[in-house]
Image (cartoon, rainbow, N blue to C red; front, side):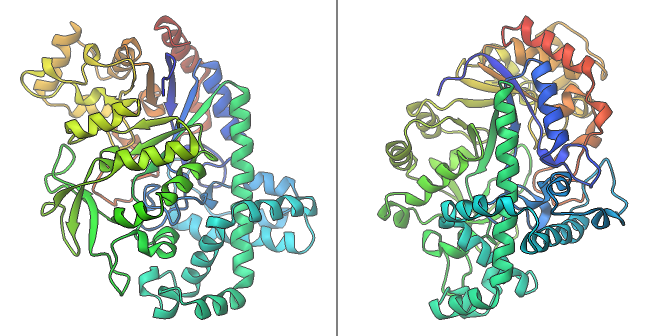
Length: 501
């Protein structure tokens, strides 16, 4: 894939402002798209849009195909008659700056249950045919996800491998009994997914009308507690009790001295090969219903992945295992054609990873916050003059500190290296836009910056600290007035000056 010289902004929809405690797919999403267009941007990058579970991480979703119900715009449901004034009479005290996922889990699910009850009662009946078409079109994943969600609720939120063995192991008679007894819950889950996809499709169409495409993440691995793992157990390394025998992570690196123990189940590539990699074909096809461009998180895992015996306390004692990335991507390309894929090729990158990326002409990534470390930094691949055209350059990502926060906490050597490289002496106030300028001036075809950097925010606005499940991860939100027209104009001028408009 070749991306024309352009730029975009990274912002997860949960960070949008709004009255109900989390960003939604309504007026504020359209306002942000309008702002992007005014700023001369061509891409909106988001993180995975799936329903989040433990730790609230979008990279640990209950499904690789489903959408996050928290993002459903309640005002739209009110306008369609699915919610009434009485439903909004007693609102919780939402924090406008942070998402309280626990509060969303209780309150928003109650609101969506009311919307479904109203639909069953005859409200918004014009949606009925559209709903039935959606259920039929998405049955390949939706039926399993609905049953998984209903069973999970029925068992007090326990992970699927802690359910009674009959439903854990998907015995046909047990599943038939569950479908009958949980039919109302199944209908509600399908209805809520319909609402999400209906609203997200409308947002994408609005963005497309403004000349903006959506870049969306798909994590290479699925969550342990997911409908994907439960419904496709033969595609992973599980024992007879549904426990993983090995799990995913990364070895010690820049982010963590003990590595990152993700805990995701690992793919049984032999089983996937026997099916012609159909699971991956389906997954990419599903992702194209959400995104215009797909960014594969942890792309290096398609060349080789870090296998950690289960159970483990850290990721230190693992091993590298080769993966059939060439064969898999060839199968996907044969089924779906050349896909618009960005490869997240950060971390421990070996020649086989680079070969896989380049053979399929996937753009890789560079993060400028990584460019100025070490003594002899002149050989750093992430320095602007070392970047390639078929590459995406970031000031930082969701896993980094904000650029202002990074400069505040950078060591003396990093600051010296930056000053030497740029012949400048930036202040904490000016640094974020200095690094943005370097990104935009680079030869990389696409430059993407987090909205926090455009707003020049500090560490308090950081989205995630890898390897932690702290209460501040994934919670940041901006307020409506913070999305100022003068910032759009300044960004547009930088975009124009660097040939990205």
